[in-house]
Image 1: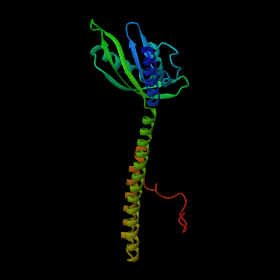
Image 2 (image 1 turned 30 degrees about the vertical axis):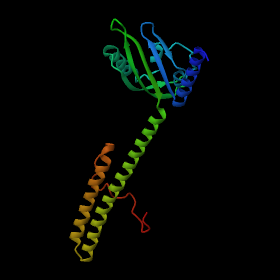
Image 3 (image 1 turned 60 degrees about the horizontal axis):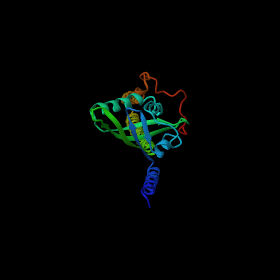
Image 4 (image 1 turned 180 degrees about the vertical axis):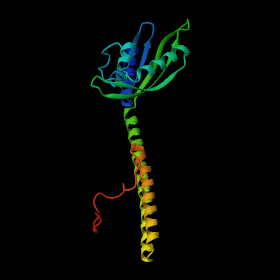
Length: 221
């Protein structure tokens, strides 16, 4: 096997490995604005392999508009300092789909100290990012459910205790104490309900707001 065939097989193995990992690499020659992308990197961006020269301007056009300024600042810092960089960026495919890439790279300086090349890799981490967001959303929903259950239990305990105390007072023919217990119970309920509706920006509850528009029936309606 000659050297050319070995190189071809090596490139094929590398392409296969990148496809399996959903990872691509790039090598941008800064002075000529010529960028070599691997085949898989073109696919990650939603394009056919080697279908265009990925100039820096073309690359930026693929970046999500809300990320462009940040990405340019990261690259500018790398040009100035020569330090490697790592970032999460969003790219927009031709069909409008947004993908998340975990990119890293380094700037190679020329003999005169100016940036000459920028090389690095990009891994499509969209599935991981979306899965993490779903876990966070599920955790937030669970936390909200637990909070609502705790708040409901607190309201129930306070109301039940107040009404029970009022009933005992009535059994002892102490109407004044019964009225006091009921008044305190309603005030406590209003306070707790205000705590619940305050994040929604609603007006505070006033006396009488907790009275049903229609009386409850004996079947618990």
